[in-house]
Length: 129
Length: 359
Image: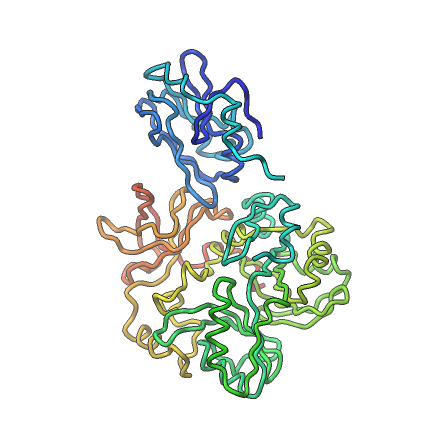
């Protein structure tokens, strides 16, 4: 599984890319692989505010629906509308074209509480092969 | 439990999950790809977990007439017929297919989860002149399904297959092995269910998949395919809590005979059921799931039994038990999915109408 070093991670398998102003959020390669073929994504509304760990979005595979949680508290500034027609972008490009939403944090220090790549990888079971 | 193909599935990187007491492959390449391949070409499914019973003897036909809802007398040799095994109260113990091999010789094909209970139920109710045997441990089952199944299976074994009508079967030899080749299935597509001695399961699987035209498909695709075809799944659409009249409005049932559970079925047929099974096509791609409530305004008017994106239709569909008055095609309903109302309408089954099963 791919776990980019420069990103931060949550226990619920979201990744966060922080550019100093805006946090971009998606789900990890591990998560998309577990969910397999995604068929539907429900996006939040721009301008809505969420607390950390609150449900922000829903992704559905053929078999089940899964909640996507806010990694940090903040306000949604953008959503990836391309996912409405092509939810499979999360499967093919989880860290790039498959991003789900962007948010401005209420408190930048919350980012520090997120896991780094090593911590996230050690949390997941070893890949089966 | 594991089928003889368990290690093969694991080697193919299949995602395994429990189903009816068995550890089964849910998907290999992915449900959507496997679904699409079955609709357009040919897939093979490991269905060794399902049960097969053999009944022989001069009283076998009369016993089956009493035990099963479908008419047995008019099943010809080489023909199969679908129906139900009921309790006295009409509750459905299983849905199953009855094959006739001879005047006094039948097979029943039953679900994996219900196999042991079915065997006990039937064995207890067989006359002295009927020999019952659960042959599941020695019979493998592979389903080869898709519009090109005949040509692709012929290529795999280098033989010409007989032309079989829908729900007819023949005893053939494939690669020197005796096979019951049945033109039946659970996908809505043309294809076969193959029954043969269990020890050949691995060799058959390898031979069938070697050319690349026939690809493995898992129970995930099997579920989306059967849902699009409007077929019930025992434990979801069928169960002990209602008679099959609510699911199929009297189809697959011979009301001219008396069978175990027939009084309850006649009652439901004549008085009507409170709810009937129907298909709901949703307006979007977000899926409803089993146990989601069907709503009309503030009223709960039904409950979903199966729901998913229908990959061939690119919209979500659901099977649901809905109040009798609201089951006509076109009836506008909503489904409450975790607090969100998804709009849709009742449609005639099957959802997917281009299936080749009956061609």
